[in-house]
Length: 245
View 1: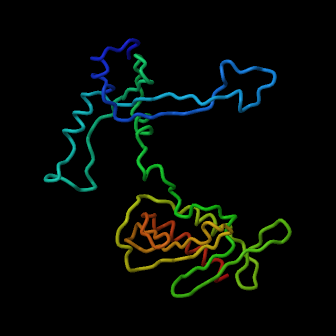
View 2: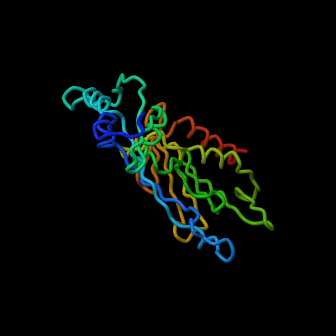
């Protein structure tokens, strides 16, 4: 947009007061690193660049005007009718201004805690799980793992079982929205996963029906996120396939 932006241009593009500033640190070869005796660590150094991101001052003002006030509209269903518009970036104190797409802008701006945190309800490596205690429809079932040579073998009672579908369904439990609210009365399923991890030896997950579409996931006693109920149903079916087989 400009190779030699003035203060006025920075203001027009919103970069005099950017919406986001990201500092990126990375390893790069030293310019004076020798080729003979330098190790990889000695041949590299930490470098930094700063990226400023913003929409134009006009667009920021327009969005602010369209935001609902507490008196007029506080519903979650509010959506701005804003058209697709570009955004702008500047590297450090450079006078060059670049235009980026709205999609790139939205990806760069997605840096809130909830957007960056793990989306998986069960975040640990399933290979560390040694036992799963499952509560379903008033019954309790225990799945255990053991070693046969280098191979991990899962059992339910005396029977060897396949846990691929259960593992897949568990991994598919992801947050559609992080919430901390009442968990609801109907427990679909709960389980305690025992891990080969001395820092976090167990994880307890409870899944409670919120409505026909969503369940509330409660992790270690804390309401955490809404998950799609169809994924919970898939997990229930995977458990039933094991214990009712």
